[in-house]
Amino acid sequence: MFRKLNRRRFRLSMLGVANLTMFVFLLGVAFSPFAGTCSGSGNVVEATTNPLLRSPSIQQAEIFQNAIREIYKEVNPAVIRIETEQTVEVVHPFFNDPLFRRFFQIPEGQQKQKRTGLGSGFIISPDGYAVTNHHVVQKVDKITVKLTNGKEYQAKLVGSDPYSDIALIKIEGAKGLKTAYLGDSDKIEVGDVALAIGNPFGLQSTLTMGIISSKGQDVNSADGVSRIQTDASINPGNSGGPLLNIRGEVIGINQMIYSQSGGSIGIGFAIPINHAKHVIEKLKKGQKIRQGYIGVSIDPDVTDEKLELLGVAGKTGLIVAQVVIGSPAFKAGIVANDFITHVDGKPADKFSVLKSAVLQKGVGGTIELRIIRQGKEMNVKVTIAEAPQQNR
Image 1 (cartoon, rainbow, N blue to C red):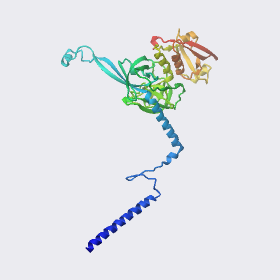
Image 2 (tube, rainbow, N blue to C red):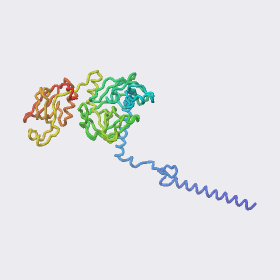
Image 3 (cartoon, helix red, strand yellow):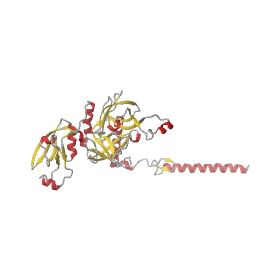
Image 4 (spheres, one colour):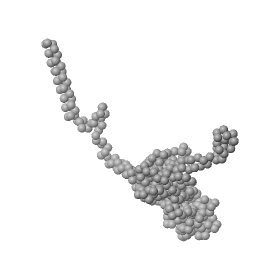
């Protein structure tokens, strides 16, 4: 009996010591200098206040980050996914072999096959007009448009221009659609932030960011208009989607990439939206896109020696290398070695300035060239004609 009683008292005493030890430990934690700065789950200790948040640079970075978020939220509903279907006739190399046809029970003649395509676009009016690339909807039988809210519509081709690679479609049965804001591609500068939204490789509503790498690249485009170069990732499926500035305005239509692998390597090209506006307006009116032409070729190799010989040393402009006999430029009196300093009041620092003016004014329009000839400045007006078929 005595031993049992002592053991019970011993257990109670030890329990009291354990409880006291735990109380002291908890009290120590409560008054620890680290109390309130730690949040615990296991052995993980996290500071509840990040000292970097007090940095003005971090605060500015967060403002920039929030701006990108807002642009995406605002513009993404106006970006569409375009799915196409096309029926093509395929001739198999063995179709003409009677034994092959008999063995596989294949009928004579060509075989029809359905092909599907994918691209992007953006809505420019609440009643469903949308812009994409010509190559996205070229010779297709069916155009399906999917919005970011999950709704799906059929669309019809309003008009398309293979030279500029611009197409206008109309989403059928849609009203009150979110539209993208068109900006001014003439105001962009190299180094500006560039954002691209589209459906690369079928991935829905993807946003990529980069900068404007160049604003006047003379790539091999049928219309001769210089493209905007960007390192914002553009991949198959992005074609026809918008290239945006930091204000969320469309400054270009994503068109193509330079790549040896088929994927983005940071060299993408977009059609300047200012050029696209003229094409879109004509397509909407049902007008044919006629390529303008004045009939001059420009010297691609301007050197200090040539400028000195022409008496224009230190000046910026274009040297006329050749004038086509009977062309609009010939009729206006332009001759070889004329030095063009301005086109419609804009400095002619690149050939693209002249090309863009001709294309934007269009057939029947007039451009004014300021030229220097043998030390004398003069203004010459040239009426644009339609490009001969062989020059297209």
